[in-house]
Length: 238
Ligand SMILES: Nc1ncnc2c1ncn2[C@@H]1O[C@H](COP(=O)(O)OP(=O)(O)O)[C@@H](O)[C@H]1O
Ligand SMILES: O=c1ccn([C@@H]2O[C@H](COP(=O)(O)OP(=O)(O)O)[C@@H](O)[C@H]2O)c(=O)[nH]1
Image 1: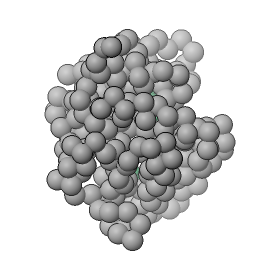
Image 2: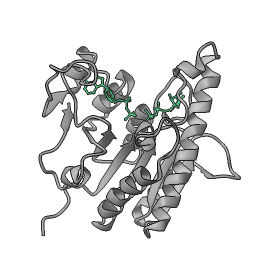
Image 3: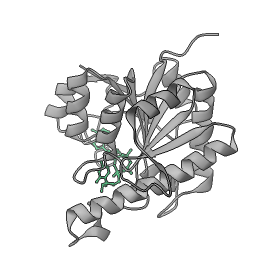
């Protein structure tokens, strides 16, 4: 049997995708499907660090936050990611995957704080580490948290599992003529203002020479193909 292409990865799971077809919150079937994919990867012995988003519950820039102090709204968004992280860890427990949640915001009664050496230790022990509360700072996104934690954990790649199947020449939800890139450089992605990830995340990964693979979270088998180094999604490279 062929071997996985990576030993340690940072997987960014879209918070917004957790809603499935619902208007808000966590859709049970959707989270179970995501976790089944993660479990398959974990069983191959790939060390998995996960950053989960919060857009299914709250986003600092959402219409619902209009008129709010931006930092306050962003803290609410970060707390939303803590809820998603708890749901994710629990769904993993159900399928026999051992996960630990670490939060960038102090909330000790609920989850342990992020401590880098401890996170590294968990990964070495084969546990999945779920990073909650993004970077812990307002005005950032969980994509930037993925770039940051991916760099800190010395991951070989950031895997962005999202609602689209890769990076397009324009937002495919708005432009039906947008074309899919198989590979694109960080500089091209930043210069083209491709919104699939924010420029801060792209810039951090570029500076750390940490490649990103963007792929669909809903396409069956996509995550496994990415892990095996097969043709799937878009590679963003230096
Ligand atoms: N050039 C592009 N290529 C692909 N997706 C794009 C592009 N520009 C904008 N998008 C949009 O970016 C979205 C993914 O980013 P984001 O909303 O941050 O998702 P996530 O919930 O995974 O963090 C996609 O749903 C897509 O509509
Ligand atoms: O480091 C961070 C990460 C997230 N957020 C807030 O948390 C929300 C949810 O995260 P995100 O939008 O990245 O989640 P996703 O796109 O994956 O649903 C963001 O909109 C921000 O308001 C933040 O302030 N700082």
